[in-house]
Length: 112
Image 1 (cartoon, helix red, strand yellow):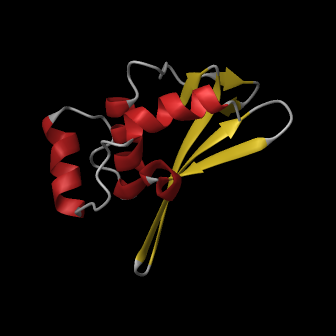
Image 2 (cartoon, rainbow, N blue to C red):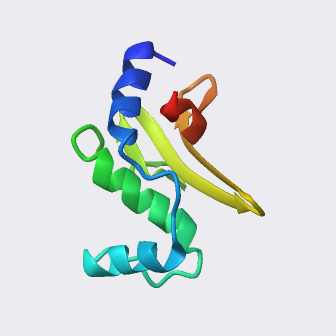
């Protein structure tokens, strides 16, 4: 991935909190009128909400589509925002799709 692209995204995501409380996150989404605040998979939608909040100066969030596949955002290349929760572990990543390869920026990389 282009180092400039990586640096720009990292600079915006540094403000994303590293610990999330489910109730607080859902209430934050509700209070701002985020349409997915009622979803059972709150953690994935909360990460998408945070990305839209912190990356709004860089990204387009009109759900770019390629054939039948839609993505969460676009900034030079399509992005998909993903969050997975495991016992005692939260893994958050941005998947960057290009024509030749898949890149992932993890939350751990953003913090360094």
